[in-house]
Length: 556
Image (tube, rainbow, N blue to C red):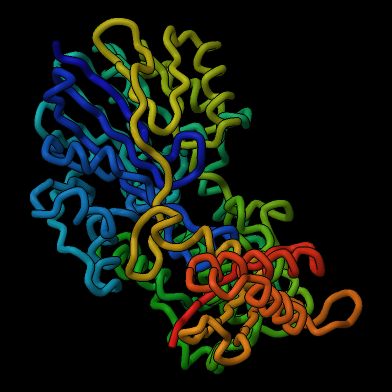
């Protein structure tokens, strides 16, 4: 018997790395559709990790039955994992990928900047167009969000239509792009929507998200009031915000300089597609020093405190042609992504110490969210009138608040799914019927795997308590050929009594070898374990922490 199922593998119970699968057909012969393939970024708890990606073991196991991958928009948490994961999902490169022109352009630019990226052929679609992937018929529906060409999807099968909202809001006065197509959502609702899979990011906030046009006016007022240079940092993908800043600068008689590789890459793609038409040309970096301080605005990367981004470099005065000085203004036209608070504060403090005025969302209307608040969610329920509601894209608190709101607004079946839950949507009562492998994988340089495979567990321990390496060399009679050699990294110089810490560990290692009867030293594993245990115990007694300890036993 055919079934329609939904499986979230990322972005449900957490923010970021969205990946969802829809399955249709008998359980043994299901065909699958993937929606989005995103990443999130590591915090300090993952030292050395470049990207955090969804665990796709289940997807890999089903790749022979995969009909296609649809990307809703070009935010990193929705498309950023595709270049890394596509060779695993489709080793032959045969699984079709569907995206809008802007998303396809961003993917191509991203691939050009990452050597060794796979060649992915993208089939472009636009709002109002319909295409097929196996048993699924997919229609793109125009919505508003903080990036060009965001799409909701109507996914239709023989068992009903699912509306997958992606990221959206109901901005009635966007700075660019079309309005949300509420008429189409209403038409789908009249025909019958089986399930609504809906963005939960702002489900705890009452009211309606302010319009991007209001932010444009707020930025214009901030720039008009500034006496020196103005630097505005925002998400590089927010083309509408970039355009708003350029218009605000132009209206205040200022020229604009772009800083940051990702910022320039997005603007290049947006310009090719006509999104930057009618705006004055940007300044070249080498011309910056010739422009009066009150006649320039900088749009730059670094809103999340990234160490190598343009704003952090300016805060450290590390740029050759561009600088900020006392009396200038820095505007954070962005929100803080959880986990980045410390890095952002460090950059802000550097700027304030330089005598620079820092303005953020609490000081003026310089940022709005791209996600729907509760009144907008209620509108979506009214338009689509779904039988089933599944909150996605949010942490546990957001999902719980959204589930309650769905129930209060008359959605009959609300399923509190989390990553890895296999939800049967039809036929019969919607419910979680199984769970599949899920979790997080890591990209670490050229490697990809779980925390054990890429060494993150030991790296965390190294960052906490350092490392000690001990070399023991024994002769044929199992006597020490020479004194043990010991190297300690990331440990204290001395204990509380002032004794050299390495000497303390050395004495423990030597004592451990000498305590083993010579006949038993023929077992190198025994010697290794004894020395390792003694060194760690000595460190614990003197320091309260046990470093990672590597012991090498050799015989000559």
